[in-house]
Length: 153
Image (tube, rainbow, N blue to C red):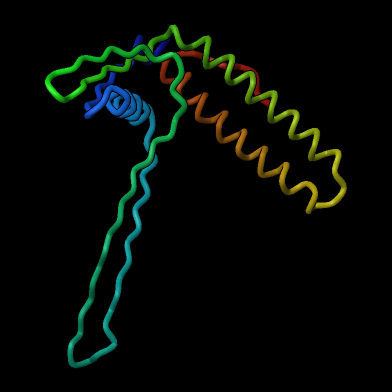
């Protein structure tokens, strides 16, 4: 059973490229967004003028790889409007990309095992972490499209 037959997002821009970029960004946000909020408090040390300032910063990030999207763009005056659609047709692309990510993780793991010192292993461990993060992103999109992936590195 799938979550969505297709996902559609729109983007607007002053160029076709900007409109497409905004559409694919919106598509990514529809699937997953990481929200980070930081609160900070500053209190004055002056007893004659007590003051407390609270600031809040919220960042919302989505950095998913979007493969196989179909774009339609139209120009209205000086503005471009682009629609990006990601359908279940892209499931096979994501499965192939996941296979590549798993292969990279396994290859990096073998490199870790071949090294003796921690300092020599470190770059491979960091590379493995990067490959794993990419794998998680790919699996997130695949899941949103209703695809399944059984192999685990």
